[in-house]
Image 1 (cartoon, one colour):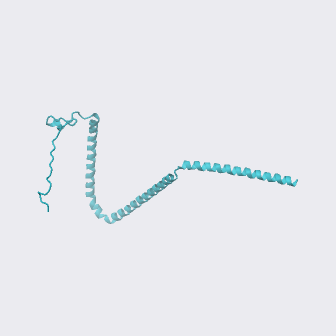
Image 2 (cartoon, helix red, strand yellow):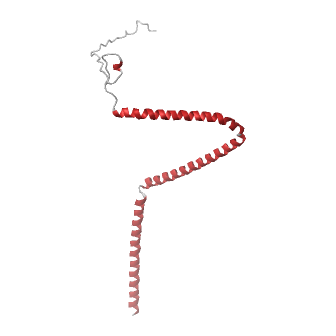
Image 3 (cartoon, helix red, strand yellow):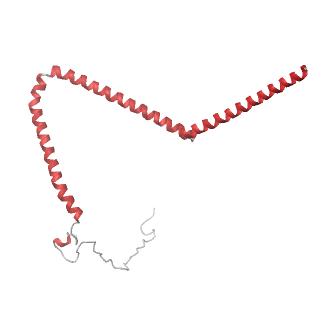
Length: 176
């Protein structure tokens, strides 16, 4: 077993700083003195900040007041209506269940319809990407193929007409 004297001694390195650290004051703050000046920026608020505060504080306060009044009205209404709900619960519970099921059915139907439309849209986009063409490009291609086919049929008709005419002339010559 190795003892402490058998091991190699640890080496210790001492690093001394070669440069001194200089505290750079942050922008807008006075680091030379103490007091409140160290917390305040050098410049005042901009005009847009002042307008935002002048508009935001009354608006926020008004909305907070309205939400408090709404909460208070809800609590008072619930306190008054609770005995009525308990008294009429044999009628209200089935009505709530029926209305809940109806709303659930309507929402489910809407979700299924929306899912179907999204699926159709996805399929159309997928088919467009697979074929690499859009509907107008496909229509142009179909028009060109139809025009080529019409030219081909017209040429075949002319050829057949000339062949019939040639045979008729041959028959006429051979019969005379």
